[in-house]
Amino acid sequence: MRIVAPGQTAKFVFKFRNESTGDLVAITSPQGSIFDISGSVAATTASLSAGDATGSYTLSWAVPAGTTVGTYRAIGFGTYGGETVFADSPYLFEVSPATEILAYASVGELITYLDLAESEITNFALVRDILYAASSAIDRYCGRSFIKKAYTHRENIYKQTIIFVEHYPIVSISSITVDTTTTLTSDDYYVYYDTGKVEFDVEHTGELVLAYTSGLSSIPQDIHAACLRVASKLFNTRRKEGVSNETLLSYSYSMDPRIFDDSIKDLLNSYKHVHMR
Image (cartoon, rainbow, N blue to C red):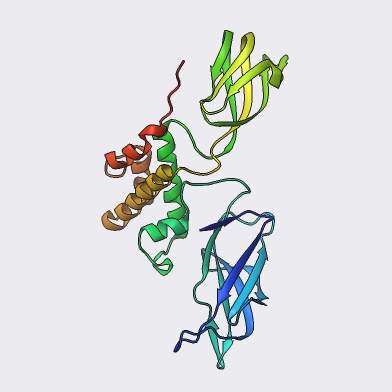
């Protein structure tokens, strides 16, 4: 599923067909609307632009700053043969903060994995929460997060030349200070980006504060697959057993074997957090 951030422009292409023949057809008064997951209009209905072929139309939406993070639909419609007609299918997409991955799979990917139609989902917010819970469970099992974001590492050190940060691979280091009085420059240390190891030229003693960014530019297929498996188990458990949302998500938090089985662990074992000191 497409992910866009506030301030970016999302472009959608809609195709309209004659229901009898399946042929693409030109329509009159082509328009498009954006809806949030509750069905409320999130953007003023706008005219569609003619595309590069008969029956093809485009809609561009500049996502306003401050748009609520969540799942949205883009729908195209117009008039053909005196009746209101809709494009082949609506677009399901997510608005999320720039450069931030919120889970290891998207709502749309989980719906496809579950072999469900979008119309069968009545609570998109719950589906999104299930994906967050599945991703969080993976982080706990692996002992680290794979989502790229900023962290601060604090550690009291004594005559040390080597430290390991919790999250890796390291993408960049913003600053390193010792007892707030000593600021290290990039010439004062060497970074082992893949393992989270930082080695100093000389020994340091005191409270070390290291600001850094860690994570992966793309999520490994095994992590993605594990997220979909855990999330699908959570979703199906809720539907079959009728447990509450709180109980359902606690299964994930505690890595209940009904949810977090050996096949999922096998996918994740090579990603577990191990430091060679």
